Length: 422
Image (cartoon, rainbow, N blue to C red):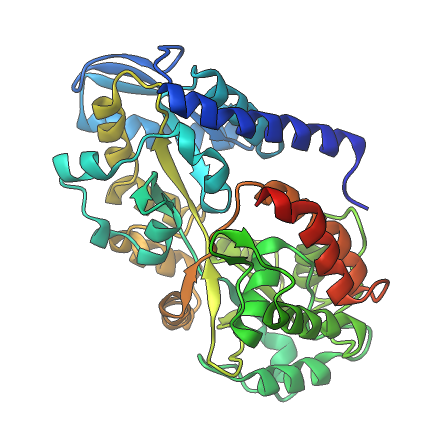
């Protein structure tokens, strides 16, 4: 079961850092720290980002180097931290007022850190960065109180990956955009045979909420507050949990296994998996079958899904915000995002870089499916304590999927433990 003492300590550290951010924002930050030095056209900047290793560091440093290519007086040095430790570290830095100028930010965690980051709307106007050049759902997802906090580099609506070979062997036609929940369930039941299942799923935040949204239209927040005990959300989550509990079209979920969902799908043990386009090219490299993608099945009001993504913002303590913003403009320009797309590192948020990703994906239906899903998606807006919510969802959601506790009880427990801090 997740929620080990080490994980709990990381969450406490992150939470305490987040609680301090409001006070820092109220004081206006103002510390120079390691944020950078120079002027609008000449500055040595530091960029804090999540990095997976040496190769990852080198790839992202090339993105940073685009700023120097475009502005000879501006340099950006990448400071990498692994994902598990990044959020507590950046929370501590932002709370201290000594954060680097450029900050990597994920849309699902933005609410926790937005108060310590600089709104970018005025800088967008000053340097003529057009919001319309990026996918709208993720631009909206990186806003807080209507203000743009970060400029996205990647984006993506949740879609279904599926095993075309298993579909063909079972005599099931490839799903088309807008296919229905009844069609999905019929396919999943037919595919659940011979030790394989039609679907694999886990109670991840983005996956769970996307299924609930398409099933009933419910969202996890209402007026900025956690709303998991709303009857529509309960109904959607119960149907979702029943994929495992009663429909038996998905396997039980082991606790403490972060890669169970991906392993089941890539090994061919499950025919479908909900995932984001950012994982598609990596998944292509892992599977030995023909990979397809489809939209999330349509509920009563059509196919509905959530979009998430990441981008770059500026800490309030940065002394050279103009230089930092010009660097971000370069880092999210067409050239570096096209390079990232071609390498399979990101589904680019800038629309001009989309063709490179579609070419790298080599899946004929990719363009139609992603564009359809994007049109039917909204950003997943989260609460300031979403890290806690996600941890609780993983713990109690696993129990609900496995039939150990009723789905409504799981949601009530999460709401009671996390709702006051949302």
